[in-house]
Image 1 (cartoon, rainbow, N blue to C red):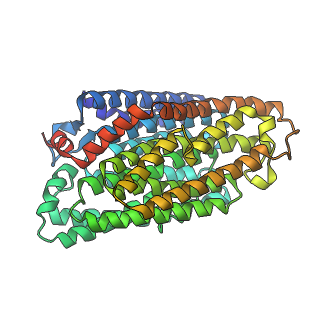
Image 2 (cartoon, one colour):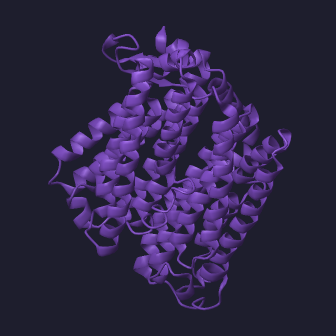
Length: 495
């Protein structure tokens, strides 16, 4: 069943090409987009099932053996990321069917979304670090056009910042790839894991690892490389913001976890301690920025930065429990954060603004939307029994176990400030009496009910993750075992 590894790349590639062929038909593009997202989600589920049953799966493209040919590989971590990518893609495309305007659809909105999903899945499944660079560029091209699509002034300004910083990141990434190849003679990650310990100059490997840390740190938006994200994610349409918020920075985090568990583990005392304190600064700076904002999407954008800190914290602690906590946290956060952006779009349609000072009364006008907001908001803040509580609990336990009380204190303070900022949105947008008696026009209420379907699905998944946290965290621990003991990964690629 190794061919299943290729499906999450082939499906959006074929779907995007079919959408390009149907360029003149808006209806055909919408149908193709929905079929592609549904098929990708199904393929992710099938891949996850096979990895759970049979272990790490690998596929040699063209039957060329590693390290000479391209190899695609899926372990529990990458398979879970592909599955949740399919879920977010499906939710965003379904949401877009209601809100995407004709002008953006006419200029390739759905092909761009599917090509973006292809780039994300390719990054999760590649076993070659140069091809990881290629998939990052596929994502960058698609995301840049999606951010600028529509040509509005704020979008163009944000897109320029976004693409400039990401091009700098790509240049650093490519430099690191070249140096790594010069030092080892290969770019296949399984072979690199065997050759890096044999390099005669470990200081060179440490320097290369710092280049990768900076390159992936920019893409993941860790402190102090985070400033581009809050300045850009609030400007495109809500569906695009949700797609970016859910997936793009997580690819950077995935890459950090992959290379700093598989490749750069020879100087953990220095590299991972630096990662740990970078994580603490990211948590604090992000959540303080969120507390200071009054625009809903800017609050959520700063929270992306803060929550990245939790994911990277597990990598910095570098224990089985910590890595499992990071894996669990990433999955939880992708779903919760994308959903909060989708909810902000419905609130804006009902009240005409994202500014909390100009809206209110949504609890009385739309109790269903208020409930759907509370589920991901409280989960983001780490309230039991929702998914975010178990994710944060595992990381706090991991920090206490290795006596890293400073990072534990930072994580707890950031959690309290996250709850404060989520309650600020609740108090201003939903509970405030201003506008409570203002009815929602029937046409907006009708479209709002359609938009709540994907929101309700993601909220239900959040509840299910919390309810099934035991078996799901056991899977996260198995994923952590595969990351910390990569023999199965290496064997699957090289055999």
